[in-house]
Image (tube, rainbow, N blue to C red; front, side, top):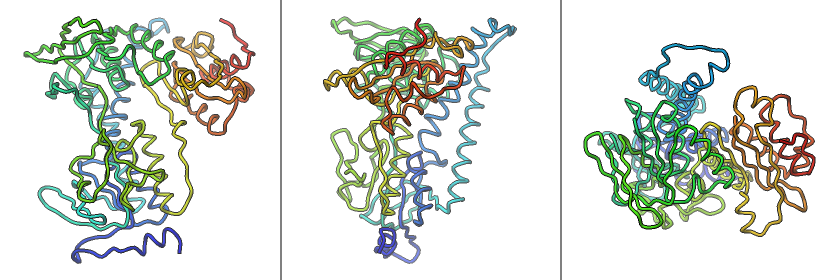
Length: 484
């Protein structure tokens, strides 16, 4: 009997004739959840998808990846019109920001994507059930919506409930002036002075939006630089780039209190010398990370184990300590990235079908969607030093790239880290135009364990931004063509 037949022949006895039963039930309709449901349906599983909110798509689609990118694009258009169009010979008069229209466009993008997911659920015969899911036992969910309850049975479950914004001890957001990323995506005015607690991806992206529109932006960061997990070369270049937008930084500062009086928010912080400073603005964005959403799911009812950070513990098959119950995405260990969750959702569905999928977590790319963009895959130079790995470095500056010069996007570089002995690529880090798209070539190369020499010998169309990747590979192999 096949794995799929085993699943379908499992115990689906119901507590009453009205209860429905499924082969697989996915809790949460974010990128990990809905992709897992689609793949499971394609593989022949009778699949249900549970979502507690009125629309599908989870945090990423509704209050994360998609709306933030829509605002980033709109604000970049305005910034270019303000600062670059005249050099292109395009003259404008009375340029202004229509923030309500910008928000309406963003909402339209989200609604279009919502509708797309609903269509996919119908196309793949996935039953969508609205409500909050709680485990009653290892095969039963109670789903509550508008004080009404229903129960469903399932042979297998995937928990894909995602994450929510994290705050600091003693600091409470009010949703008006002291806000999280959710509220920052729906402001009714451009801040005069936006203070951001945290120098990570979320804060920098949203800070970029409002800085381009005219806001003063201050970043208060506990560590000594931006995006601490990224290669330090990228972090330093990004810091310089954002400074051109008007960002100011308070590094090595520990936030003590955040208070509000009317329209004024005051952040009190202490530097590494113990000196206190006060920063005042009209908005404060708390962007210190996210925490897994594992509350009120009834996990304790069935004995699912969590780690000390509230994440669900899973094995190499992404199965919890309770057989038949899996977890993916932000609720488990690893980077909180939509595309990681998607890969994990597919992995679980294919594993249940008896296939042998794999995920190389070292090759999950990370991106900061500022402009210039920052994208990374593989190991950083700091990690290689810590591990004692003998490596070499090649760089390709965008100031030497014809397409970048033509488009006036010359900030940044491509950095390739390759093994000094074998030339195998160990990491690729990019800050520059379209870095988020170019990193895909690096991921593909590293998936097949390519060398820097391999990339240096691949023909890249001219002129393109991706030629800087080839230049970095040429540099790593001692054959750099352009020396600036």
